[in-house]
Image 1 (tube, helix red, strand yellow):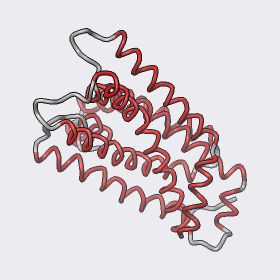
Image 2 (cartoon, rainbow, N blue to C red; image 1 turned 180 degrees about the vertical axis):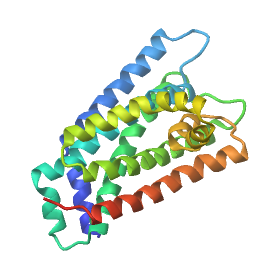
Image 3 (cartoon, rainbow, N blue to C red; image 1 turned 120 degrees about the horizontal axis):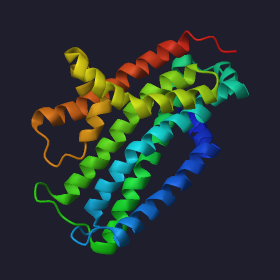
Image 4 (cartoon, rainbow, N blue to C red; image 1 turned 135 degrees about the vertical axis):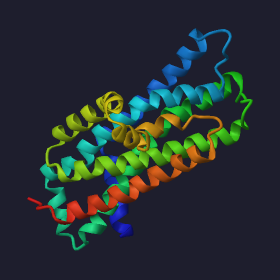
Length: 251
């Protein structure tokens, strides 16, 4: 299993789309930091903490793009190249193969989701200091926000992986995932106004809760939801993905 995971991580490292996204997001983070510092409001200094806030806002779009592009090329693309068929014939169980692919994919998405906020924090701290918050120690807020970023990136990755691994055409994966990720919140807001049951479902989903990870002082109930829902999402969709991949015909 360790060798299988190392193989998947190496393939992720060599994946051109992953490398391109890494360099693109680094460039975006540097440009964003410069724009905020030199063109931002004089009343609000661009510090490490404010950089974190700005980076997390941009990260919503970064995460959606990463999920679609890496899912399409790294997971779905293996069907067209015949790599998936070779993996299945390698002697490892399908559960092991899927777990390794999901783990590597999740690590890739986590890395991509951390680039913009981390660089914005570093840039803001170097330019104007780390900053402070009245409600909570700044260092604790930074650690908690980045931890939530990692957790929610893994949760979204577990959801997309189910579709990406079982889809044989990378273009379909990229288009479908982008479409869902870009318009799901808007559609859900509209449906929530129509049906109370759906509103309850949406408000307790990772799609809605990911927008609350920057709350300085969440209540005990909010904190419980912020932690338990993404963990439950990872476990449920990892199981669904394993079952789907186990029953899938690999051509």
